[in-house]
Length: 173
Image 1: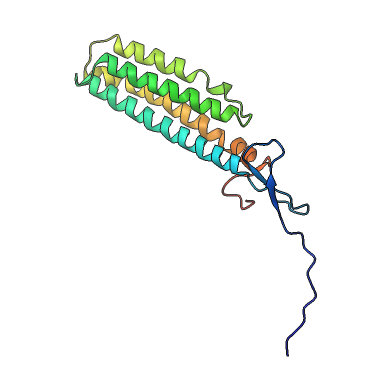
Image 2: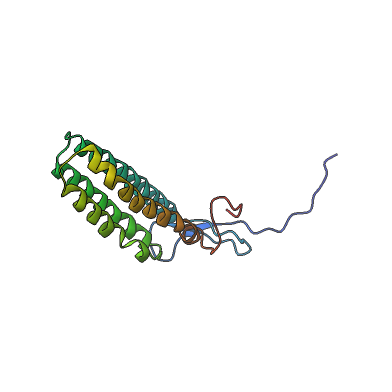
């Protein structure tokens, strides 16, 4: 004999095109406390993640080129080109964070600080000793950048998931 279970009353989430007309989708479940990220926000997540990863990779490349400059295996122009790439990627990354209304103004000094250190270093004759003298300051500026980006994770995840305290490891996703 088959058991008959009473029908459960539950709201089934539906996904509809977001009202803004973009290509994102949102959940319409009225009793849901979880705000599903839209396709658009997930793409933005990927864009921000890729931008930050690329920025960090370019800062490593800049340090490597600076080391090569000290060994006379890279030119001042190559160091400058590496800095320009970092600057362009920094701008891209900042713009992507701004799209989520995340204030990045506290990091605006980073490129100026980095440029000043590099100009001082490149004003000297290339040698490993000169690079050793300036590299700690280059690393400090880049470390400050990394810490600044790290401080934006909480606000970023809150923007993605629509909650002030949401973050990847807090179990609220």
